[in-house]
Length: 348
Image 1 (cartoon, one colour):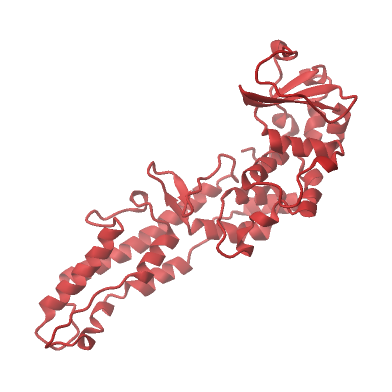
Image 2 (tube, rainbow, N blue to C red):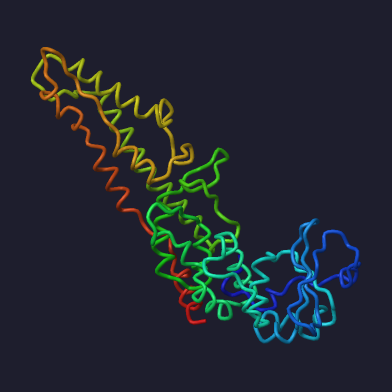
């Protein structure tokens, strides 16, 4: 990820080698050339897949007018200025074509309303960030509502993809970024390899706002540490006793009932017998909070000792309200640098 201080020259693709200036016409994996300008003076080779590389005939003039980075790329001292074929292996084909079609006024060839997947939307944000194309592309995002359908806070039972955060950061959608960051942070768990994933099993992209994932993981670790500490403190209180609030001779049986059901709850969620740390459990903050809220601690009853006499026994160690408070008090992973960047992007 480039920092906010990245210069235009830093964003220019690496200089092409002599051997790459004129690929052989019969080179394997080349698709039919897409013509964006009948009198184009350069051919971009998009993609790095050996089986799929897309030639695109473009106008250098149109590209220079659309992007300061593209303009710098075609300055006389750069080899791309003289090259007739320019490889761009790191750029997503579909997303780059969208930007190029806008730059060449080929609006009729753009995807229609709600026509982009969240993956393509993320790739488009990468292209716009790399080539400074936010101002060029933004009107078409609004016109065709390419992003609206992927903002799940507006839809019930929607799936939540972390890719939205990089998109919002790139285009300066500050309000949705702040709301969505908190929502995702509450739902970050770990996969079998210890990598961050959401409760919907989405991984996090390589291109992400600077320092954001690290901040989100720090919050997860901090909040889960507090939650797990409460759960294990409750276990210790039950073991140490007394538990029974009834003035009877059933303390041992009452404590055994409460302890057995509580340990079963921990075992079912892989939180016992080993006392887990946040890096040793796959649970997210939200998932653990829900499990605690739904847990039921059994109370003792017999023919001689009705259950209503022990109704308060499982409430002596009130861990549920404390866990709920930890969930509600989750902090924000958004930095001032994120806000400043989005404010700048929003003016484009």
